[in-house]
Length: 190
Length: 158
Image 1 (cartoon, helix red, strand yellow):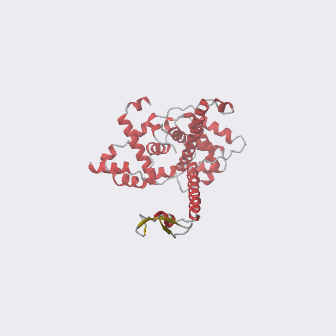
Image 2 (cartoon, helix red, strand yellow; image 1 turned 180 degrees about the horizontal axis):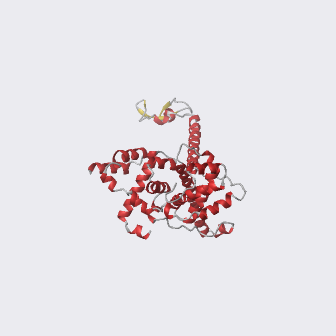
Image 3 (cartoon, helix red, strand yellow; image 1 turned 90 degrees about the vertical axis):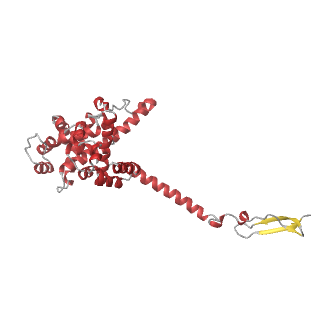
């Protein structure tokens, strides 16, 4: 449960309620975890509109597949795994659309045949520095910084080994530190 | 200090994840000098949006409830596992390379003369000169196709 909220139900009750299809429990789940999901999505995808879509898809996914959740494991980690995958899907989708819009700008006929003529609207990440990291590194750093996750916890979310998660985290920490030292103005501008 | 530099050099030179993880675990995580060159948790925290900065989730719930409470079933759209596309592309690419290489090798093996003796005996055979009756002779080297036999025919120059 998040700090600062007044939970009417505990995690077990929420999950049991959602499994029974109770809208009250679904609402309680969104209230309890909405901010967490939104923050992680925003930190990974980099803009609010996409993060909201990721959030929505994540909760729909959770409600649909809650029966598959293994209760011996952390619900929060399971939820964050879904957020991460949905965020990656969103990044891939945006990248494909971005490539299409670049093509469409040079080949108007492509857009006229039914494509969306508006170019992709990349908005800045919470900090421009984070754009220098890969989505995996960004997620690892975000979970470590915001949620206090260890390399092992991060590895569960990223679906990789703890060693790999450790390398992602270390690389991210070193990259950003180097960038901050070399180009201090970037943080202020970002 | 010198050890830290050496670890750094190995880390940078060998991009092997298990090795890197070992270096991190065995040295970098416990070395204060190496730690000083990494972003701290507090510094990293300033870069990210925290969950308590998000605000109200009312709008989010409304959007979700429209899709869950409308009576229409939520369409199935399982998320793609991370890197699945690349894994498939790599697998298909590898299979194609193996198939093409195998096909080419089979074709080469089935050709007559494949193997170490492929270079014709006549190509390896060398005659500097042939004398017949004390005078240089006219010489012909002949190798029947598909055999290692070489015939040398020498005739007296007319």
